[in-house]
Structure formats: C-alpha cells, structure tokens
Image 1 (tube, rainbow, N blue to C red):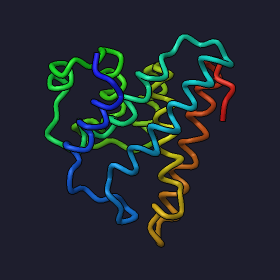
Image 2: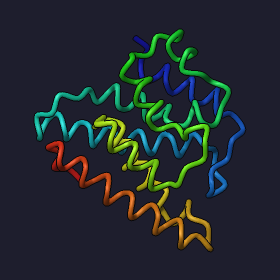
Image 3: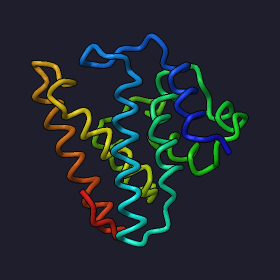
Length: 164
C-alpha cells in the first residue's frame, strides 16, 4: 500500500499549476485538509475507540479532489496500489457528473456512512471557511460551508465521534 508520502506526491503532480481561491498553490489546501482530517480520525480512534485508520483518512484527504479536478481516475488510484477504502472515500467526496445542489452532495456524503469521508468533508468545509480562502463577496459560500459543517458534525456525532 502506498504511503502518505506517495499520496502527497501524486497530489502534487496531479494538481500541478492549480491555484486555490486565495491565490495559493492548490496543494496547500489539500495539505491543510489532510492535517485536520488525520487529527479528527486520530481522535475518533484514540478517544472514541472507533475502528478507523487515520493514515488511510489522511491519504484520502490529500487525494480528495484528484478525481474531480485532474485527469486521475479511480482505476489509476487502484493501479497505484491505494487501499479500496481510500479510493471509496475519494469517490464519495467527488462531485457527481450530473450537477446537483451542494446540500444534496452533503446528504450523499452523510448517507454513505463512511466516517472517514465525513471527517474529510468537515475538514474541507472548515478550510473553505478560512478568511484567507473566502472571496470578499463570499457570504453565501460561508453560509453554505458553515451549514454543511454543522450537518456533517452531527452525522459524525451520531456515529460516536466526539471531536471538534
């Protein structure tokens, strides 16, 4: 199974040249999401005694936009040796081909029952709420991310997660 270093290297290569909303290299967003998600997964495992692999969550977090924003495919991730649970979480977090409302996408993540994907999406929403990444006229986006964060946190709590 690939290491977090290999997942990070794949993300750097796949997202090369992409810039985030704040004008920074996109990989920085992925790194922040991965760091927050692994901390949440570590809490789930150590404190809540939930069977979750923090390193797999971290890999899925660093790769969470790779299917959506790059030519990388799920088959490519399989061929690279990523665990089925990592690929599944990335697929859950990938926008569907048919455009649907954001709230419906969050419902889909919650209904997946995949705690790792839920923790990653919480971390993604949290990072998207950061003032340095929010556009000046982004009040609607801030509300959307705050609302979905609360929904995701409640879903995680229902699964036994007690962390932030």
